Length: 576
Image 1 (tube, rainbow, N blue to C red):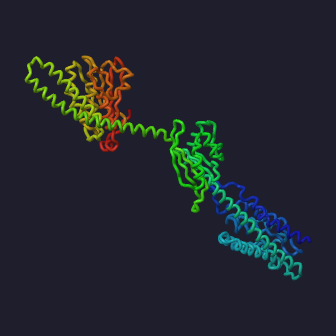
Image 2 (cartoon, rainbow, N blue to C red; image 1 turned 90 degrees about the vertical axis):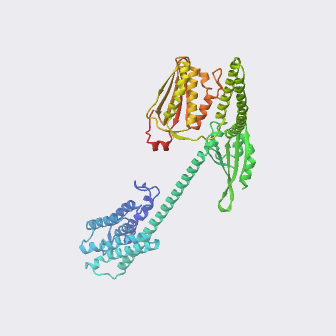
Image 3 (cartoon, helix red, strand yellow; image 1 turned 180 degrees about the vertical axis):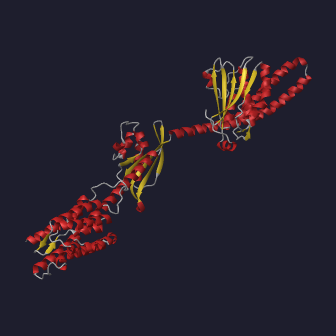
């Protein structure tokens, strides 16, 4: 009985790594260089190294002999297991440790026994077989591991007789002990493979499940973020009509009535309860139809002052097209409807404007005939009537000027742009402006920035803009007033400043200066500044006014740079 106990003790110690491996494997976190969820080539290297080392040391410590002549220690079993399952360097290191420690625990140390009882002769073969071992299936691993275990144990068992220390026994006890060693090693080899492979398969499955879970949550998060980014209120339903998800837009819509409500509070609620809270009960029948698999449907709804476009559609399962839920979309189109109505109103006004422009154009023809006959009648009338003829003709000219301004303001055709110099346009107009200023007893100062580049302009319209702004400034100034025309390069464009030293414009009137037919002059038409604004809009520019009562007024006209032209002309960026 004592020999059997010794064998069982050695079996338990040698099988210790197999029993401890499921308990220790996976308890450590991944290495710093490991990707998340990655299965490394030797993920169990440290655990197996520690347990095999402990097992080998205990087998050496408790080594003994059966019936006085057969050595009993299974230290090479965990050693060979580490060499086959672990890293090459770990197996070689443990084999070297085994060789060093063996003399300390050997009962009758000799060099031949060292070679045989440590299994040293099998070390190279075991280490070379490790790469093939890891690639084979479970049965192959059991066979290969058992082969090395039996071979090693046979070397240990026969070491006293091969080395010549003792003669080979033929008694039943010795043969029984040798057979027990072989059976024990076969059992331990199968145990090693089963426990390690079973644990690795469980860990691989766990990692796959973990990876799938992470992928699922990642995709769910992406879907939720996509829903939240949509400018639509979206509700997802399961087949029972319970809410499974809502996006941020719907949450904000719901919070108009219930400010403290959270997304989690809406999930798993019934759709009828949620829609009743926000007065959208009319959507319930269409949602029920969508849950039955009916086609998408859409409808305009009005709730209070808000107008909504609603859409419901079924969610179907793969190729079977079995309805597994529904999606409900609510879009607030109140602002779009307002814009549409305003656009229709603008289109009607545009049509009226075109009709008025056509009528006005036709009015100019009889006016020209009237003016021609007046000139003829003036030549044949006495000179005492010249004063009356002059007044009538001036009023006709003023009416014709108003018609021209109205037509220029009403036109909506694209203008032809060309590359030209703003300074050349100002220089061409300077004599005309000087003549007007001299008649009024005023002066003009022109300041031109030489760094101003050429711009894409319509010269005819820009001349009209400068004349309108210049004459407005001169009409606003008393005698000895000064008008300043200045150009300057600013950030991303060119600025034209038209300053006068007039009385200034009150703030209340500044807000309406560019409205058609609004004027502060007794004889003004109110179309000059509106025409200037229309010209700058066609040039993609801006016009603004700054005025202070008693100090004068400055109109600023901004011409933006064209990026392609800026690169072509080599214009540097200018900071303000």
